[in-house]
Image (cartoon, rainbow, N blue to C red; front, side, top):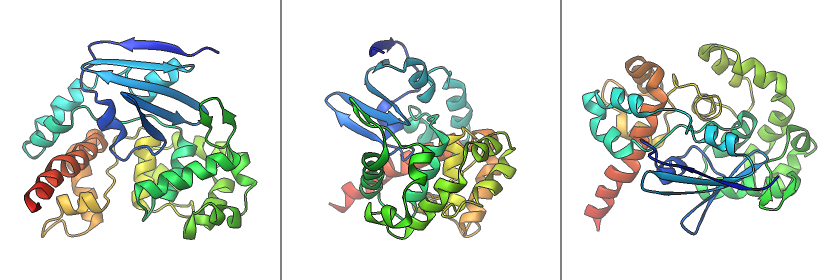
Length: 277
């Protein structure tokens, strides 16, 4: 196949940079004016200028869906913006879209992400890809489950996974195509319960997998950033924060979470850092 450049004009409510840099995905690299993005066994180079997006890839349809460019997200933005507490966050973050990623890759990646920092997460994932992913012209594909299942816990530890090594070893054997199909075809509550049976998958990681890998908008991951932003005297635990905002935003909870996350890291956090200088 030959790479093809696809140009999409007049795209509303989409920022390539904000979407990639919002904690949803770990396999991307800034290159020139754009980004190289890797998903499963596919790759694209994408760049944006104004409301025009260019995607160069052999898998055009895959990446149009991956970036949710087949969806009109303006109405979701307007619905969330109508909540008074979300107006500022929505206006600052309306370009953030929920990616549609490969579920198996998301499960493995977010097991690695637990109690970890982004540079280290990226490094571990890349070493795993180099170890057993197919070599492509553009780099390494994310390994298939069969390839990962051939590794031992010691192999994962040698790749820098630390205490997560036995979790990855177990996940490569547990997360079969049948398991993913079962989770995908279950309602959100049942799917969460199934994901929590995978070693190394806690509630926050399960929420991330549901949101970024399965497109379930009725989820609300709460990490340290979110807890700091949303905790009150009444909402004094992660569970209470999650339950409150799921009830408030419903099917748009996941997008609301990304708006809040982006706003607090890139606007509120930046203002605090600037004042501290």
